[in-house]
Length: 326
Length: 295
Image (cartoon, each protein chain N blue to C red):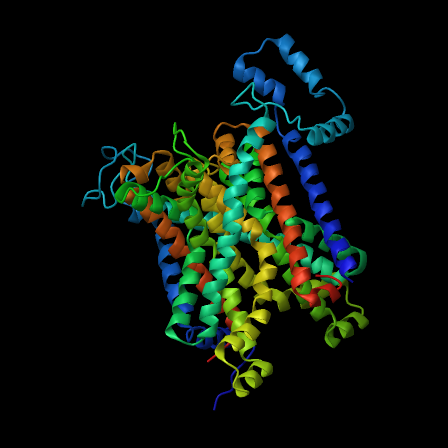
């Protein structure tokens, strides 16, 4: 059964992967103008050069040949040239930015669920108290707050009023580091505000789900019996947690895309040099090859992370392996 | 004692109100929403200035003349905010209705026709759901804008609608499935009713509450997405939405210049409006699904 579950998820992942590849091929080609003519306009290239580019990029070939060439280039990293940073290649640009995005996303993919679940556990454990009400209401408020607005507020408070955190970039510009630790410290210092913003605006759904599942479990008969037996609070908490944390864990997979989306917008506000900021730049400068590639890379990371979360869930909850379609 | 016609819409409305008004959060949401809709509709009479006109010096702080100061080119921010209500509500609502229609179409077809149709439609829905939706809508909006064939705010609406229909499809599909098993539908079928009649006469009216709640909740979400797209510079520059104002505030470094009156109010408006829409949606959900009522 576990094998069946893994297989079905793997097939879905491949299908999504395939759809994104197709979309990435069709959509840009459905638009007026081709990369060669746009580049020619932008940099006043002579017609001979344009002709060479057109044949080099196989833009004069029939669509199916273009598709084969596209698939080939996709896996060999030949994604064309950036309009804005010409003659730099799209591949170079995206790969240069990817580590920063992975760092920010990696950290927030842990802090968001951790913070959200913690709040939810505490609220559920003390259900019906003022604390519970306060957590629930603030979670609903937070849901409606746009990330980037909180980011602007944080820039104002911490960067303009208090001046304790840097409000842009991933490293201090022009800084030289005497040792590796100093470098790490600088990275973390710049990471603080973006991580805080994403965590504080994305945690809410985890809190609500965890709280509700906690409340449900605490009302189960086995919890009642456990309490009647006189088990200590610690043991009760352990019993409750083992069951109550499953629903928020499933959400981990569903909401990863949300966290990534949040990181993308946050990067823009903080000029954090990741793929998200690259997306913003390419929108501003109509740098479509870069936009396509950035969308492609980020989608792939989300899909792979989703798959990993699914696997984790199958390991944690044996029941999922017996459900044929989830 | 006079008899009451329980099928009349007056009775239904009264019954709805008697339940709905007990939900304090929903009432608060409804009042706030009503105020914002009023502002949006009568923006021309409420706003002190034309939001596109340069009516003051750049970066003026709040004063009696300009309640929330002016932006980088001397436009009145208070007036921008009032017109922003119109753009944000309109785009959010139209996008939500489009997405819900699309989702219902897919969901009801899948649920009603079953078998191969269901299999194909739900596979597509699942795959569509797995593509990170915010990224996808950013990508779509950018690509559609490039065609230049539609006014820019249409591309925002399309981008939101095309990425937010899958949850609606899932919901309406399962509702249709459970309705289809009911004896009265089977009886109607045995009497020789056409599929079209069953869908329009029996299924759609019965899932109307679900559709209504979805439209409300989707509107809240769509307003957030609209603000995000506009914030990234994908909005329509000829339309003032709250997201667009925030975009300009960011580009012009308002936070570091300490111009709080520029970026604080639009974000607050987005948050308050989305929250009120969500509270109304929640109230409707509780009304239509009595199991959610806890007294």
